[in-house]
Length: 372
Image (cartoon, rainbow, N blue to C red):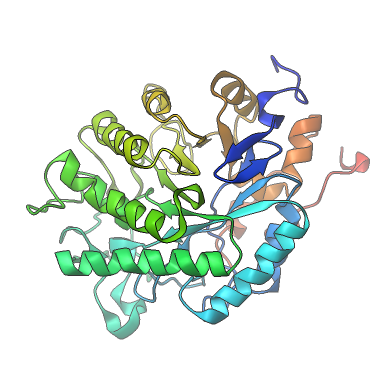
């Protein structure tokens, strides 16, 4: 590496909102599907996060559903809309805080990627427009359905669901929330031209397609404060048929609006175009640099660091960004220490990402001198 690991910007203190971090290695939001059938975190979920908590480190929770109709899956992601779910998360945030770490809750609405056969009363999945995902199968193993296009009144109701979930996340002891505006889910569906063909004030122009995302931010900031609010974007993700005609202009506008209206957000979180997990093609042309120049607050960069961890040191040094790791943090609960000391990394097992077992979840070994 071109810089000393221990003196790298990656291991220098920084601040997000009111939270003072001791390093810039972040746990990505990672769907793991280990909750019970009421979408309540169970004991092994607490163990998983506790294992990855470090003094002054930041953990971002897995995507957490904001309402019963926000999505449903064969195994169980967490929710944030019942008191039992809050209690389950409270045990986790208490354990994480006891180790000196901080935790943000990622709030999620799956939008058109859900399946009516798995939703209450078999309601159709919600979306900006009646445009079905064409590639792959939904989580019920069926073709994706033509979703229900939200009315303007229903959009306001979903915004309120985000607000309610944000308030409950505070009750659950989180240090802040991250709005999931990426990877082909509801907010991202409003942003992208491929999925939003509306002709009202939520469709058409860049300003209109970004309106829903910005209204969600506005509402949550009003409810819990800017310093506890953040959002994640993925301008070049082709996950779930996402495509936008003008990504630099579209996400540039979003960041300009956030900088103008909410410069004290905890952070913005962008997925790199080179992401080698959520994209079907390798992108070595596009860059997040224009967005970094607009946003003057904390910036988290994710994507491609698992297969090239040295890049994390380089990007942190050049930009001051926090760096979020996904798959390699799954396989290395002590990732921070391994990176700091140059220890070898465990390899992840993709077959155990989305199942309901302890294997591939809380049984990855910590580093010892006998590990090599």
